[in-house]
Amino acid sequence: MALHKAHEREVEEIQPSPPVASETSSQFDDTYEAYKKNQGNEIDPAEAKSVLRKIDFRIVPILFFTYLLQYLDKNGINYASAYGLSEGTNLKGQDFSWLGSIFYFGYLVGQYPSGYLLQRLPIAKFLGFTTLGWGIILMTTPACHNFAGIASNRFLLGLLESAVNPGFVLIMSMWYSSAEQPLRLAAYYCTNGIATMFGGLIGYAVGHIKTGLPRWMYVFLIFGSCSILMSVVTLLFLPDLPTTAKFLKEPERIIAVERVAANRQGVKNRHFKKYQAWQTLYDPKTWILFVMATGAQIPNSALTSFSSIIIKSFDVDTLGTQYLQIPGGAVQFLSLISGGFICTRFPNSRCLTMTVANTICIIGAAMLVGLPAHNKWGRLVGLWLCYFQGLGFSMSLTIVSSNVAGYTKKQLTGAALFTGYCVGNIIGPQTFKDSEKPGYRSAYIAMLIGYCIKLLMVLVLYAYMWSVNKQRDCESASGIHLTDEEEKAAVEAGMLDVTEIDNKGFRYIL
Image (tube, rainbow, N blue to C red; front, side, top):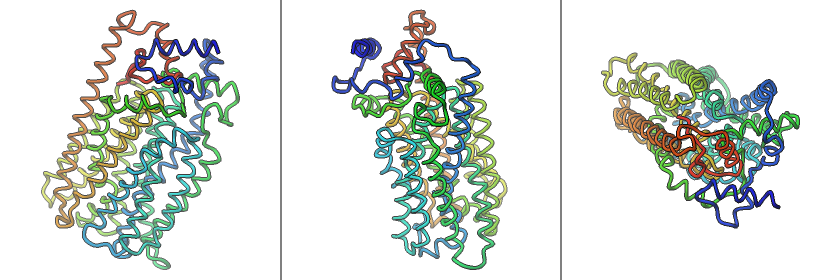
């Protein structure tokens, strides 16, 4: 009891905006006991490296394949569109564009409930069951024969898939140090590029099916069955917490917690805290990330739901619309892996990496807008350059995983970012006007505007975080950087679920 009161006094000293008394009992991190066992003890670097290797082999492959399938599943209509989806489901006019938007209406509706459940429930089990649910929904898509049916199907698919992105961001912060996160996040996020290549090959293979069901149906049956299989793997092998991970021995679990405690964010706290919700609302980063995500995702439909249609507008045959997506996927894959390595090697290069990636996207979108219609290869290259946007967006996710503390605040900030993600993806498909095909000039202009908005927000975010770091360094005891005692207090504050705004020992990674 005395220890508990001592920690309450410590929180009062560190945290200018303490929670109300009824919330005090929920301060301790879910892994706090394991953290205290090793506090003050040195971790053998060889043991820490061994634990990291075990975590990589268990966590990253599950995230990799789940994210691969998530990308394929939500973009199944892109591959199916080349094989009679519109005719098979009686779509007319803007119906196909609305299918792209309706998925993100479901994603938007599910964002905050799924964020709350990710905090309250065992995270791995929740993600496993949502993967099972969307696999089942995907396999029912061939039963849809009109717009109302497939629109409902797409809404439910988005509703369930809304847990994946924010859930994976939380998993990154639970298992990896801030410096380790960019490469690991890129390792699963690069599946967007792999899926673009792999999905194109599947689409190409489906194109050679000559008997049985209509070819567009096979796309959903293949992807759905793979998702159901992956849900079983997730439920069996993805742990909920470092302290309950069966693949780690007891001393290794303590090391896993201690490694992440150094982030000054804690590992997980399942208690929802209202004061952190209000602080999320008033934090400038929340709104900067929201606008950034909206701008980034307006062009996203061109690279997902409409890429087959865009490439077909360049006088390419049906099979060509599939294999000519492969170079774009390769660009996305290589940029993500390269960017992940760079940001891991140089930790304060994330905003710079986003700036470079987004500038390349602006060049690509400008080529689509400015090049004449007869310059089809030039415009195709412009489309491929836009696949650099995956690198910029993945780095914005590390802003949430590395630069937001307080578990309620972290999941709500992630939800705000993905709300912007949904808004952009709802707007994007509507810029593809059926009356403008095959040129789609409004869509290309919208892509260019979206990328410019994102670039501006990246620069504003960098300026804000840099200025806060500078001010806190000046206010520290040394006037330059944190002292050893301030470092320890900052780590302890993180394990007591103090937010990055209240924890004056927290420093943003730029």
